[in-house]
Length: 140
Image (cartoon, rainbow, N blue to C red; front, side, top):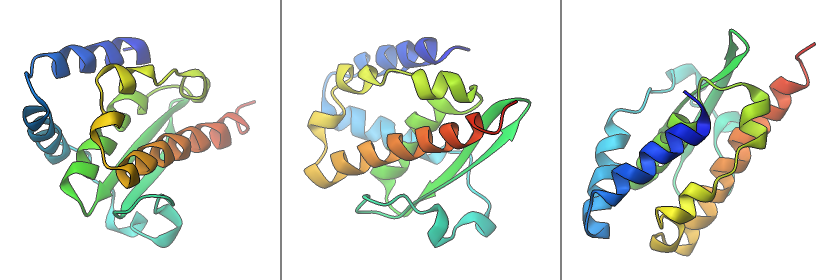
């Protein structure tokens, strides 16, 4: 499935809820389905800088696509990284690099986060794209 299609699915899911308390609960539920990072990757090297909570992300290439796993020590943050991984995992590095993240504004996520969490969200996106850039340079 293409990144834009996944983003549109997420937008539709968020519009099913009337208020932000329900959306937060939904994000917490999403976080419970996160493909967990293997404990060997829960290292300082894999922590996303700029997040108030601890967020670990690991990436690897499988069949020319980047596959992400992650974990966080905070339930809302875990929901946020789950959404991002759903969008970017199993995509080509080129598609990840070129992806627009306007869907985040469309669902109102950034405006409903504390300033530190909003900064963390930006840091998460940046780190996922950095992994994609690193893998893109390895493709012949």
